[in-house]
Length: 424
Ligand code: GLC
Image 1 (cartoon, rainbow, N blue to C red):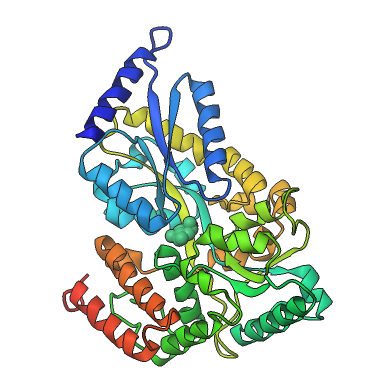
Image 2: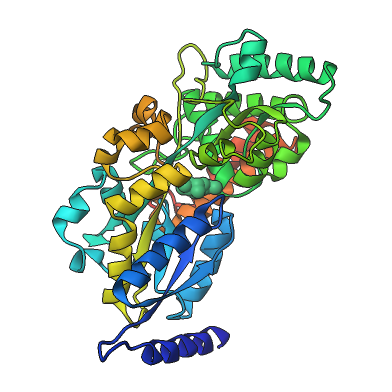
């Protein structure tokens, strides 16, 4: 009921805001708040408001994608008009399609066609363009250039090399007086971020993507078990126990305060790590994540966020105009330069100002375009449950509650029940 009341209040503001006879509206947008997201979203939305005479209401949402989805589902299930524009994860179009309008009715084909086709396909459910791509993401490895140089090391190409280098530098730095130094930080809290990290380990070992493109459950295999067992070995040795409760921002906190040699994170951490107030500004290198072994491959998981308009919005046309503005090349360029958010428009990867601000958008271009998708397309509305089963299993292994082979066998049967015998 509270949600409905707030919706009515928003409507009252909308009517009051009519400018010079033409109806202006207040559009409410949910923005993430990881790193600089909230600021960049607010600035962009306000610029649109100024240019169009509309008003903006910013709704800040939880950092954890898992918690954010729960909040969205609650608001959407109530049919609430409280939020017009939703920032949605690359894995959610299938889950949220029924609550969003078809943006192809408001945004022309040419504009849509500027974006990576794979993301447009991902965001299209039953011929409906559920969301416009805003920024894409790929998991990458951050390292301390200065420390690698000091210890005469190269950026690691296999996880074993990473483990050894992390340990050597961690031990050396601790002996030299920094007892807070750790070798490697990443995301291992039981939430969507762990699905990304663990899928990277598993796929880099050749252990597949949990469920394959045909819907077959593939996770119960030796390579996947070896990958998770390897990661279990990091906890308390090269990674703090606390990593079991880290999301992106906790990892960045440790790395950015100078207390980790390596970090797995998304590109947004680059701009912040190199900001004038960062203790490690200018000392950061970025590479593709390591391979599982000599016959493995480097895998970065595909992430990223889209903008969608709620079917319950009172002003879908105006809301779609905001989406068009925020996802435009100009805005994506601004966000790339200021916040190292990956554009979804191919042409921007050849833009010199973008490449100067974030050189690895050029050097790791292949990593981004070949990033491995989580199985959200095939599991569709059941993705969130399937992912929860996976991250809980991975968390049990990492925290020593279970051994990988047995836990993956259990996961397989849970996923099998969820898929009702193979049909998702
Ligand atoms: C990043 C990614 C998103 C992913 C999330 C997990 O925000 O862009 O796709 O689900 O991290 O924490």
